[in-house]
Image (cartoon, rainbow, N blue to C red; front, side, top):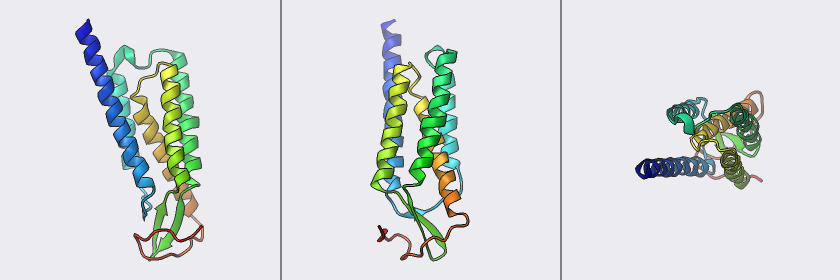
Length: 169
C-alpha cells in the first residue's frame, strides 16, 4: 500500500512540475512581440492531453456530478472568461502587413491569477490536477478567439518593423 501511495505522489508531483513548466512557457511568451496566430494547435493539444490524463486516473479523477459541475463552471467562467478578458489587455498593431501582438504586465498577471484560481478551487473540490492542462487549453483558445475578433474589421495602428517593442501607451 505504501508503494502505491508513493507512486501516486510521484505521479502527482511529475504532473504538477509539467503543468507549471507549461504555464511558465505560456506566460513568458505573452510579453514577446510576435505575429498573431490563426490556429488553435497548442490549445487542442493541451485539452487532449488533459482529457487523456484525466481519463486514465480512474477514481482519483472526476467521479461525482458535483465535481463535474464545478469543473464545467471553472472552464466556462474562469478559463474562457479570463481568456476573453485577458485578450483585451494584449496590444495589437500591424507592421509590414503582419498583425503583431504583445501582452502587457496585466496580461501576465491575469494568466497567473486564472491558473491559481483554477488550482485552488480544484484542490478544494478534490478535482484532479490534470484539469489544469484542460484549463490552459481552453483559456488559450478563448484568448486567441477574442484577439482574432479584435483584428477583424478594425483599423490597427501601423508600427515599426516586426520584432520591435511597442512604443505606444
